[in-house]
Length: 633
Image (tube, rainbow, N blue to C red):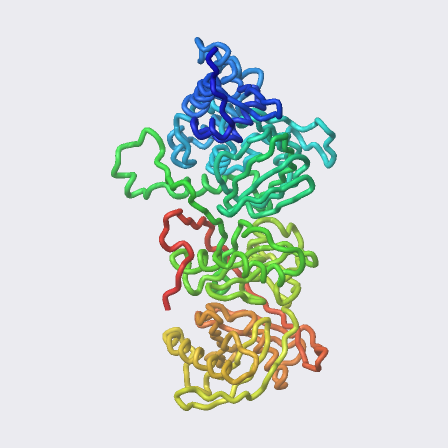
């Protein structure tokens, strides 16, 4: 009798190109039955190789799901009927997912080919998904969801109704046949910031590729072994009770490397749902492609297109949504998407963590080619002690406080409806908590910022420039530290056509002061009376060596502390500051005090107006040679 050689699972994997984990998953699904040695080791013969190659062909070439493959293997004569027969009992991509993908695509007026280009998934495979002839991997579904402007959970569909805070065992909705040997129990989907699910993974089940998306996620292993790799790094194995939390923007892939079933609690957080109108507007990508139709002048010269022309971006493109405001000409770009996980605690701690972990966003989104030196950013964050929190970021620095951006953020919050009918709110900044009041008048919004306590640090500090000029400045803190310079002392007019000379002079003053051994100043404020003597013209040179367009709320606060220290501005008196464009902020000292080390302080209130100047999406294509920005002096 001829003895047929038996092979190990590793030898079969090498011959067929199918990974051992996948072979184990097929066994768990009943597609394959190996022989076992007395010690329990798997063994395979030529008949197994033939079946494995057929399964792999049906899975990768024909795109069949587990049920369809099983039916085809049982009845090789009718593969079409077999695939269709498998679908009604257990839909290949979850409850009505095929119908849902088709409906979502048509709702967005996309052809299969357009969705294919957007998601980087073969058009033929999308077609098979929609016809319930294919079982897509998690990686494929994540790409489709992202391209449709949805989370993976939302692609499956929200859990029906709000299940409330308590969900009993077995009450979740089951998604099965997502890919071989993966089952998902949806607990809460689409009813808050968090989507929560329990994933059951048979041995060898895997993501079948690496992927990323917006938001944050947490995974806790309930049973079995779970392996995950982030950003192409070495995989980490998690066991029951282990938890991993990470930004979903990090590229991740996972699998069950063990020989037993793995169950994990999987929680995804979508910060974009915090935004007003999230549930009523198109996904960000759709907003982008609809807003970026070809120019009218081009369309008018062409024959009508059979399908609407659309903007197409390559797979892996990142988009960043924002709302722009300006306060007396000073821009604030408010970013709408969370940068990623930030620690609990103060906004200062969150700002420091942002600087450590996400500093690339500062240069990427605020510097050229998506911004320029004067572009100023605000990243909203949560606060434990105030209504809202904010991180202030310039193109090359981080600020503790910013008056014009606070006024701009108040305008945005009111426009979003987040303030309701309230006339005040609190904002936690890295410098501390400030109170903000708003006054509405026929659609206009006037904002008053009650700044942090401000004080003078030095009066008549001597400055010697490299060119030999000598003079004195006062140094004061108004949320940031400024050198206050009387422009008359230098004979320099504060005019728009002198900005180049003022920048050079301000930088020379900063350099001289910061070389003197005292705490460094971040900015220089030039001041002089206006022509009508009813206000003070101010031009502030900031950390980034750019000139503030507005009168600058923090520089104005420092100036008011200086005037109070010199007996020139009393409690309750008004100070009016004008920028180089003739737009004014109004200031008032509303309180005074003393620090623990004896410094006299004031609490200034700064009043101004801001206007929404733009809503948009910044784009980073995957092959952009300048992904992290640059500055040209």
